[in-house]
Image 1 (cartoon, rainbow, N blue to C red):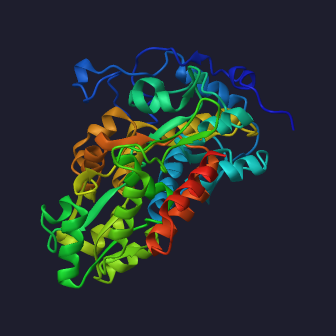
Image 2 (cartoon, rainbow, N blue to C red):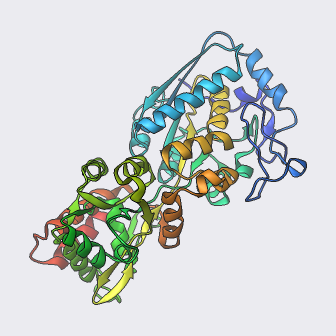
Image 3 (tube, rainbow, N blue to C red):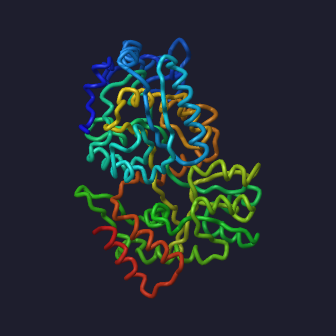
Length: 441
């Protein structure tokens, strides 16, 4: 099949470029947007990004539609995402009662989305939620429809600048910003732990040991392990040549790679420390065993249930390296909604994408999942701003780096993490050298 091109959309009446200015969002989205602002304005001051001929463009799309509009949407497999997306899709269908829709919502991990889309773009979903670090590969593969025109509002105006920049390549927007909270921090039970306890790994583990409780983190996960090495000032990033740059085996830095490795292993040797994946951590917390865990916003609901009125969240703890307290770093990132350039219904896919990433929908998703909206006004809403997990993520963002790594990072880093967890190595420098060789090859 030939790749779909934007001209087919424009011929259906979608005529407004992304550079269109202000106006209120279409009534269908239920949004109130102050372009470029951080707070909702009063009714008399409201500006919007609705295009002047939006109704004509949408009517043109409706008029050009013949038969059933079949669309597939891929989003997170979590119950909160699946349920909320179904509600939003139902609302979208109700907004256009004269159109016969058949919209299927599939379960797809954001982490695996790129691989599954690129495996067979023509068989992939029309719309899919994915992590921001997959954008460039998808653009290079030609599977993302660039957002050269809009129906109801301009996503470049309604979302945080950082999310728009991350969703763009060479000045062209290729995806709709959805969330700005793809990072990690510490969930904890404040009925069991004090502010001082959660300020450092030393205090945290000592308190958990004294209570016969546990603390969780997927130390063997490459995504989480990064926080220790980056926090100690060691480097890991994607170079301009497309290869990873990594000095985790450095011997001439303030804190050497061996220093950090020793610190990580010491943490893992605590009787209270559990190296575990997200699902296990949630189960341990629900059983009353785990009183703190390094995790992300997707786990919010489980920890709220587990900790009840003790539910709390905070930035990552410091850890001891050569006698110094060093603040852990982390990866930060966003989630985007992409439209498949091979979709048979590009116009409807883009209109649905606007609806899903509108202010009202982003706020609904944020409340349901605990993830922070990319939309400026949704993120500033009282209901979102008061969520402990998002407050913790905001604090941690001061020590976070945008996730930009090549594929060769993940397996060697995970192998290194597992070795540090087990502490079964004779020569730590050789272990680090091997990991860096794999990461940078």
